[in-house]
Amino acid sequence: MLVLVVTLLRRSLFRVLSAVFVLSLSCSVWLTAVDQPLAYFHTATRIWEFAFGGLLALAVSRIDLASPLRTFLGWAGLLGLVVCGVVLDVGAGFPGYLALWPTTCAAAVIVAGATGSRFGADRLLAAGPLRYLGDLSYALYLWHWPVLVGWLVLSGRTEVGVLDGVAIIGASLVLAAVTHHLVEQPMRRSRFRARTLTALLLIPLLVATTVLQPTGPREVAAQIPATDFAALDGQHCARSVHNQELDICYGPVEGTPAKRVVLVGDSHVQQYLAAFAPIAERRNWQLIVMLKGACPFSTRSEKVPGDRSCERWNESAATEIIGLRPDFVFTLATRNVQVGLTEQTPPGFVDRWRQLDAEQIPVVAVRDNPRYSFSVLDCVQVHGPAARCGAPRADLLAPVPPYALLDVPANVSFLDFSDHLCAEDQCPPVVGDLLVNFDDNHVSATFMRSLSPVVELALDAVTEA
Image (cartoon, rainbow, N blue to C red):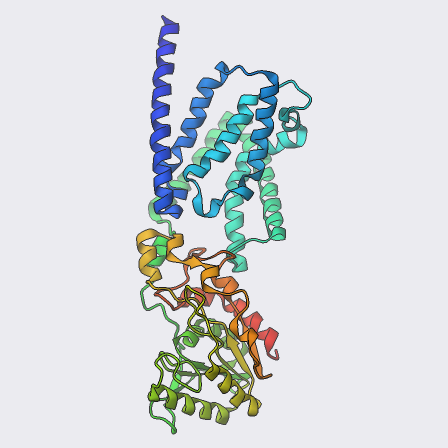
């Protein structure tokens, strides 16, 4: 009777796990194609992995393979696990059907089991160091993600190099070992300690989850208004005597400024105020701002050809700059960075730089940021930080910027923050928890403010400290 009950329960459990496996895997494949970032963290797309493990546990004792085949399975599974991250595009296609690769490889190693062969993968896996690594595996799983995210936030970067990756793995291993020996092992050895510590840890956790709401990319994006645009606090403005359409705005300063810096051009120069303001406050720089929407600093109207208002404004701005004789002028180096590699450095930009070169006024020109055919904020609010809300970097930015191919005057230094706006392959809508663009072409003040230390270092490299 007991055997019959166990058999029936085993069959029922097998059916339930099979149904969960099929439904969850189908959900994973579908949601990954629709919204990969959401699928990556969604519970429904991951349950099949546990169901797969349950099915394997029910079936593994019944699998009887010849030793050579088990040896082959062990090495095939181990090799598949090692090369998984190299072969698969886990950043864009995981979990989905790609997750079948590592789970199947792990299953192959388990089915291979203890082969008894001196050539079996199990001989390697049973070695002391790897067994110890296995003991640390869960703690390592828990630690690696916060260490990685913390490094990205502190460094202000969107990708990890080889040396940085080794350091992150090393730090995670150290933290995992500490956790294993000081938390896991003591809790296993003492029931009282385990219960007491668990209760103590659960109380603040429950309070925190009740009071605090997690802030992910969707929530961060939803909190950013469409007007997250840089402005210069404490400025006072005066109308130019040369052109009633030109306002010259002066930032606050204590006594005699250490430097006087002019930011001139359109809204894509204005957005850098968020990065410049903290620098100016720390170093007692006076920021002098001359801005006109859709009118970059040039000898002609670049946005609307033949626009005399823009052309007159530029002439007046150049006259004011020559009269002010600032320590340097900050402006755009390129424009029109869109899908299709449309970026250009117009001849009018270079002509203005030559005009200032004749007056011995240094120019710091920055490569423009990407433009999209849609609102990034709206896209993120609907789809989350999905790849569709950005664009492949190769479609937007050529490896060599257009100004590098031109004969430019010696007074110009160039800055390029593309590596902070884009990863190696993709220009994402969200970096960390920060929305990069709040509309179709402007960098949010929140994100630009986070780049202030990067901008400061870059300015130091091209100007006198």
